[in-house]
Length: 351
Image (cartoon, rainbow, N blue to C red; front, side, top):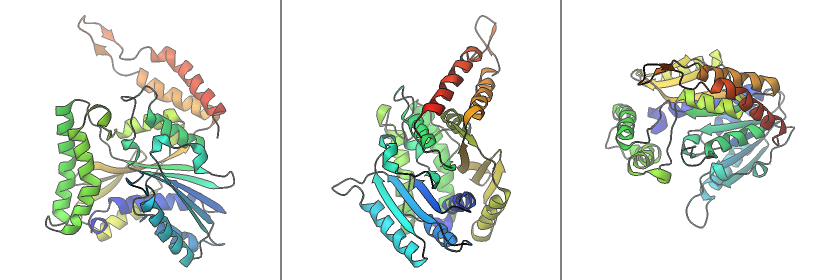
């Protein structure tokens, strides 16, 4: 019911799978590292498309890193998903290998992912990084550590989906932000799925309720849901060594047709500065898939220079003494040192 009524997941799957097919057009081995498998709905259509590839399908490997389930079988759900995908791949004669890792993202080691140099590697991350703690919890930000891990994997593409919002550390402000955000989601639910429908309870309990409870009822280290704006994600990914790729116009058109043909006309999709914005009734950025690729060598140096320069030239802020003082003037001095340290890390980090 959720997928039939709300297009966000299907649009992301369409966007993600088409980009994967593009980078794996001539690959003999394709390895997808998926940081949130959910119920595995994304991959059957990709398996089917690979089976029709001219010259035969590649060997497909999917490695899943997912929250461990409580109890004695932390990998029960991801193993069940893997078994279904194996059977589906067998029915389409696609060579398939699956590995499930029940772990928090910040606890994963690169050796566990077991990727090879002769594979086309893709990292897929749907609404997962916002659950990883940021620098407000630790100086060594777990969120940045995960992005650096992805950079060490050195994937051909890194596909990330987030929403364009951030929550304040102060309760009243955060409460208003949560209310504003989820009012839109509940409006689209009320407009597409009747309130009394039992099938509506699943998406509410899985997608909305845990985030609302955590954002409103928790503080400090227990406040784990920390979304960020698109610009914040862009800057964070750039510092980790990724650059944003433009959206393929053909894929945008296909996503638009998917929404136009099967969903309420109040949903919309638009492209804006390499982001594919999805929205409802004029409220955009509810779910935004984005495509990144690793920056190598001197490109990484100059990309960081451009980013830091844009931050260091922010508009002046007037102080109580009436003098104009730049918000971050030290960056013009510190940025070359920071760039060199980042570049050093890129050249000598294990890949």
